[in-house]
Length: 281
Image (cartoon, rainbow, N blue to C red; front, top):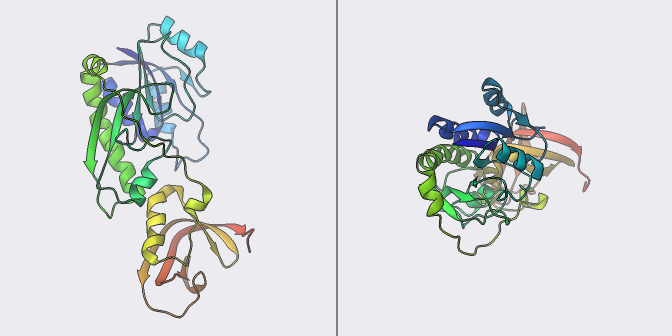
């Protein structure tokens, strides 16, 4: 089947699975990246260049879908895309999205952080028909896996990538049957994207609570106000210990490691970058 696709490097495995099952890619829609660590696209672009697949970096417009249909493209496979896709039903036979949650749980742009924060026992990925409302289309198939209480955002990210490959292989092999037998989703809560306050460390909290915030954001980093400076923190260590220090105060430094007092122990900031004086200082 001839298909167009959206993708970033994180979900390129989905597209590779379709190609491995004999599908023919005809066009890539992706986005420029201003942070190759969080949103890498170079491998996806290379994938298209090596196969002489046309690449579009601007948002999909109705005329793009019309052009795909005229070219004989039958399906659009969406695997990571920030823009709303126009109505495709007049131009293509099929359009599906791979969503990083076990729908109907986790509707929304980035549900993985909440999955870690709530220590859910399992998670998964879903392939569903592309519908006007985000993440609401009929479900073709899911791939569910266990979560550990010690899993972090970055571990979940890798688990999702691996599960997406397995799911995409299943979907590509039995697409017509899965499409025909897709099941409607039950009503569910929409999980909105985080706000800055959600990822700001409160050193008056317990060590366990602080580490959970840091672990749940992973490569997206959290914000800390330390010694009058606003700091972006990617990684930290922490332990409980009785002390008389004021929460939020620096109690020790070593090379680039900064140890800050918390309510019931200490947080050692091991990977961090200062953004300058804090506005609240």
